[in-house]
Length: 204
Image (cartoon, rainbow, N blue to C red):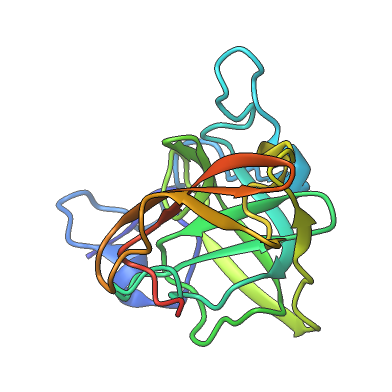
């Protein structure tokens, strides 16, 4: 067995060692050490205005916020997936091993790589370099209160954040049965937007 080059010590032998013909005793690891970019959620959500791609794409970041929905509530496949936010921005954490029982109101420090999927900014568990994905729960507070939005709200600013829209009428499409996708058009007094229900959700 041999040490995994450029790898943080996780105290898990199955992760820290591999089967290899390369002899490693006394040899230094090669490559650059992990250099995380400490960022706010606003930094992570900042997009290139021409392409819509995050300016920190593929960067290993360390950031913090408050979880606004229980882990797994939006993904019935059993994989980790949750959102967290601060007063100014929100972001998705997708996959990776996280502490059990993460719920809305948990204050977390998240370390991972910034990615972009179909317009959604995510922090994911793998990327270039020798950094280590991690979610650390530091304390628990009252979960975030939904921001009130309307049909005329500039929605991009609220990506990843908990929101509430009142007095809505479905003007096209129907609410989907459990286990199915649903695409609808909803309207309030101020405007009309699209609403998608993901079939993987565990939200009532």
